[in-house]
Image (cartoon, rainbow, N blue to C red):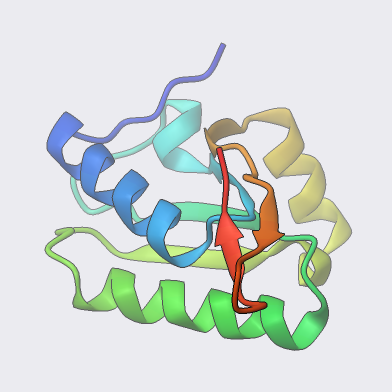
Length: 118
């Protein structure tokens, strides 16, 4: 089973950002930080599988990218939308993925807004 080459403190920060900015999405890591070919300067490739309608999915994706760029993570994180990922990259991600986050259900809140549930 593949493992993610990421320091524990960086992984915790990444998981916090994913939960905050893409709670309904399943998120996988893949690429060199998963397949054993990483080095100090390696980026982290993420694929986000989000069932939201396109405009909501893009808004969440851009919010996540902004949060990652503004975070204290010392590595470049490349975020890819599963729906727009080329077929060959999908196969690569499926073959060597590490699941970082399972999707969480959302339910309408009292004011009609959506509340994330676990």
